[in-house]
View 1 (cartoon, rainbow, N blue to C red):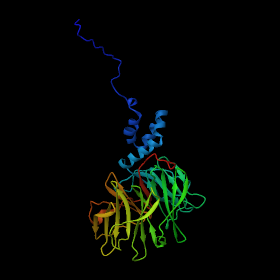
View 2 (tube, one colour):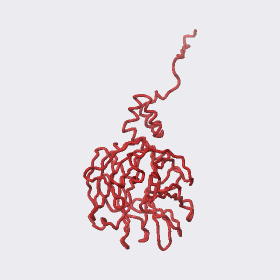
View 3 (cartoon, one colour):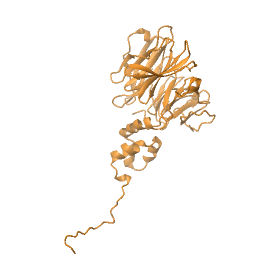
View 4 (cartoon, helix red, strand yellow):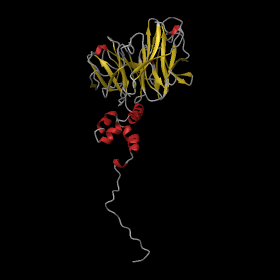
Length: 369
């Protein structure tokens, strides 16, 4: 044998393929498992004790929630005649919608429930009779009552407003604007601490009176926004923003509309805040504005149509279809399609009667987070 010749021995027992067990834990959780639907995560928790610990950690749940909320299909939770259910958001009017019936979070009747708002897979509900509020995850059925014995956290339908948000420390909070006896008070609820705290409020008495109607809050980039509609002629409408880092409620610039532009609703579209505004006179019309810094830019308008009243309704942008879903507290659900003209740009979607609900994305988020 030539001395310069090298003998290469191959170990046939060496495993040349890579399995999922070879992946670092951080890569497995942040790049693969985080992309799975919440229902699948529940199944994979049973794989091993290590996976149960990993997939139940607050770090993973928060990471999964952030990813799923912007990339996965949205669901609609509804409370209708004698039942509550969830089904994928659809814009094809039909007498039959594929849905999954789910029990309400407490032993109560469907007509006693008010659906207030949703955020990150959590839904805020209240009860008409007792006015108590709860936070609820329709997927996991985790429930938490937020009302206290000191009358904190009791929602009055025609006078109050709420907003769900997450604090800079990733704590889920509930903001409650509460109007009683001619005065306006602001409270925030910490889900982690299970406690209420009274906040400061604007000094001007004109924001407190019963001639004003408050929309529920829309959380966007550290601010919970509220539209305030004024019923008295000539007083105009207002936009407030609650800054979660400083706990301050401030007046914010609103679109340059006329005094006849009375109905509006906020919606987040592709990480930008928008506002629908319904104009009554002299021509019925519907406008869509986008907030650019401290200014508003009109990006869409449909003239000479009779738009639905938008105030007191929740409008959600549906990621998968590029359309908008308008959910009323009075039992109607509309679609807004900005690619259509005239009256075709909106029409009723669901045929069920007395429906109310909220669009949300299925997550593993707990009310105690």
